[in-house]
Image (cartoon, rainbow, N blue to C red; front, side):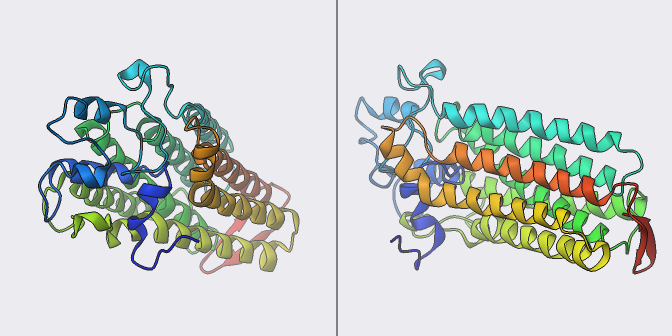
Length: 333
């Protein structure tokens, strides 16, 4: 059993080879670790910086920090010859981007549906998150590079923004604010932009050590309470809020079982995705001789989750639902 009593980031970067967040700590240890000289090769699991093999080891390194099993960087982009990087997740992320854009287009076409603009933004955000993950978790960019650090920071910012939009979509179902109006779109975008940029900055500062505030100290702990809250606590809380509000509307107002079961299916897939990422990645990596890990399973299940959210939304916005009133507004559901 993994001991997580000390902190979140003192174990995943070594035991879960598919955590893009570890890119930030790799850069930090490579360039500006706290309390030790850079690069912290012993903590990174790399040869001595003065050895001839150091640069090659960095070029070939996959996601993780001193990981006991990681997928090497793809040979066709300068990594380890004969390896394709995290090819399974690369493919699934590409499919997820297309699915997200397809769902956005489908949502936009439903001109009479409640929250179509907000749902369109949600699916576009999902496509953007998966596009960022394709770049920072597939063994394409060199570990410790500025490019990988910035892409990872953008990924985290978009992830936080995505779950804010999910919460806002749930809030709209209470009909306190009319969907598609400036009263809905302005706060959604304004708060979303602040959260996305703010979270992205915290991630970038962690990797680039623009300030020392977000740096892991001591360096060996690989811990950030900010990143733990943004990437683990906030998505879980947002998903829970969405499920509770939407289930409440379906049960108490619509009194229908089918949309409820669809929402529960989405929640189940989301939980399985996190379990695949946290519990299976290392085992799959070892079992396949570092060919694949659990990240592609997580991506697959997350895409199913998003598709089920669309299906549930489509069910509760069919024309045959009667009008209902919650708060100050009314809408056909």
